[in-house]
Image 1 (cartoon, rainbow, N blue to C red):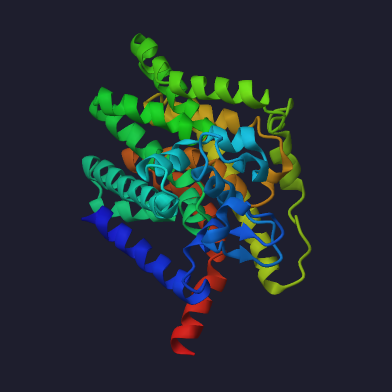
Image 2: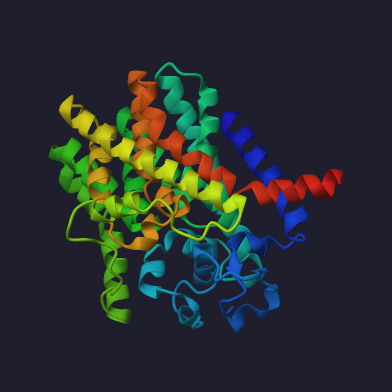
Length: 372
């Protein structure tokens, strides 16, 4: 019931914002920029393009969903084909469910996203109930940064957020078959899903060989991409741990503050960044207290991974680093539920305001058109 309520609330929001802000054009959810080129193969779709923008990641997953197996030349319109195609699961699943029928690919892409939202809310609700918390805590799944960003711009990150919760829930219950399915899907949703496999191999080292096998589909797909395009030349890492995060912390303002809205956004970005520091501090605390359950191990590995991220665009705003690091925030929140240490919710609580603030123009547009 909790999962269904979460789904209905999100559906209501999407219906309102697409109707009042996007002229009933559902392709607006991909956030395609007017300054980017839409593939002519999608000419019949009347793709909604955001004026004055180069767009966002969702537009590329949209293109991939129409050509996941390189048959129509869509990769020419993707900013980084190797990187984007690596995250193949959601786009390819939509294509396969539609049996390649162009008419249904987009609606199924959205349906898959909403199915993962239902699953994420369900797993969080069940996890909370098992640990003596109200099942209605499952509604909080909607407030996870990567979930909000996906609902705004149809990236693939909502699916990984759901799997991050299901991963802990089924591991705690010893449901190994379902867990192996999650471990197989997660890296194909986004490559950071490999951390799921690394964490459980450490936690259940006697079964590490079994869980390591779950990485084979991802490795096979990565090999195919390398044979097609060579190695991914994009450099996202730094040789000096946490140097990019430190540099971003020392430079609070990342863009010209030409309006009150941008000034507030910049301040909330910095609050979210402080939330990441709080998350890293909690990882050190978990290590100090020798908390080595699965959620703690996964958080520790992801916290170490955060130190390798060096690309400036990752740390530019909360939409970027909040989305990328959402699994870390999720696992710390699950630890808060387990131990009743509610101060462990600080990292995710600091990130959410900035993401919600991005929705302000949308709900203002809805209210203005509904009530004048």
